[in-house]
Image (cartoon, rainbow, N blue to C red; front, side, top):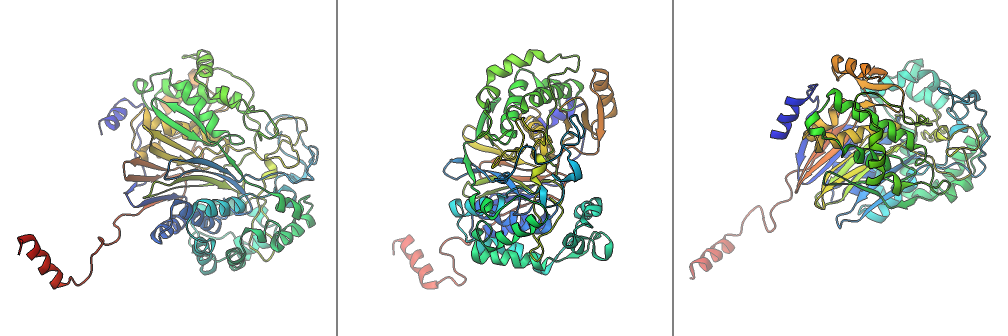
Length: 574
């Protein structure tokens, strides 16, 4: 408690968390929708582990957060098993085998339109869809590390799709925001714009076609998509819209099991995803830079601390392009970027009094419209997983008769040939995914993640400092005001006082005040057997914990008097 009082006394900004955390010992699920958290808790209540709970939550999110995630998308999971093993399961999408570096016509060679193409061909419609990895990865995780059958973990998602659920204000706002594009596709219009108007908050939304698709998955497994009839049907529709994807692309898709990126920060071990995800590398890199400064003394939210954070973000952005491509196609200097020596080399470039420039800006179209789950069970299994269909409602089309909303991951490839992120057949997309686990003395300390595209690493970077340097509670750490830059603009949430923003502007930071930076963070703090889950105000996140437990072994409703009497006599030596 003293640490929390200290940061409040020193802080240049004060804030009050809007949500309440949950503490329990029997399991914890933090997702960006209450029904997904409930699905995870249902699996653990049925005897399943954190992996079972994660897959149930993700399938449920494809129903209740259809704008963010679907099984025809991509994502990554960092899994720490009860025995201490840590693996990254990469289910990111890939370019079809017929993809070419020049298959889109770029409309500009400079920002902000550098990644845009004629007719939005890489952004909206069938030509924007990449080969999906989510369904394969989710089923593989369940088979390798789970304990429940696919049919069981799909049941909550099927139930909500068939019976319906109430549209949240968040979903309603997303539908209204993208109504013009949704109206172009008959299936999307029928579901989200009934009668020509966007669904309102509180409306009952049912998905009968999608419920049928999920039932088929429960019966036939992922092979029905990857090489099966449903996959062929999907590809037929996409090819009619101009896609170069073939059934062979689906049949050939493989997940990748990767070794996590590792680092340390002030005695805390940091574990995260490796390339083609950028988060693990650059969070470790930025934390290494910060180890050279006494952030506890400078305080949370002060001009000095935020200046240092912004400068570290710019250095990482300058290096990010070298570490965010598919390592099967581009040599990635991970070991150098995460080394303490490299941080010591770059730290003197930071001017404590002035904003600096450290290199080119990020070339990325990664969307902030993603979802995340952080789940742990009583046995010690932990999953932190970020999944997405990229932009809001992905490619903004629906496969007729299936309810499937495919990704628009082709929007992440550089449409200009000859660059690290340019299209190549079979190439994996890149991502800012930062599903992270922290450990102290070998024991889990936290698990965290969030949506937000290339802003994700900056938010997790600040979360770690909030816990380690500023002594915040986990609820404070996920809700604290954030900043972001990849140069030149310094994005700063309105929660940072105007006086601090003005002082940063005077140091040369082009300040851009925003309502929020990145998305809804979900985190779990571990204190021995106790787990505290927290969600922030930036999404519909809800933590759900499991307390209590089964009856003491040997307990029965009617104790046998003969056994009681015999035990009493035995204790008296009769």
